[in-house]
Image (cartoon, rainbow, N blue to C red):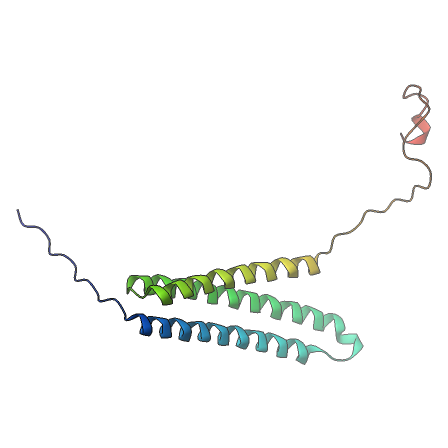
Length: 150
């Protein structure tokens, strides 16, 4: 009974090269986030104009912000995939850095989406037109309070 040959083991990356690769990838991630922010900011700035176009500019800015959040989410997924690949190639420092970057980018995209939702759909405080006391306070049964709404 012959056993299958073992898969060849890849050599671990030298710790200094691993650290350099990790820092380089983090710099690339940061550069891409800055580029995304720049594109979204320039789009919003380009949409500002006369007062009658303010509503259209706000819609365009919201769309650009949503697009930027999606781009950051895609970047988080790519960083997660890079982390997986780096763990498989035995570069643990760079892989851990990319895993942390992926987690930070994903949390940032989710927090940005939550803030965008809160800005788009603000909470409304219910108001009442009723001026007097609420309910019936006569102490009697419900027949006495029929006309007061209580």
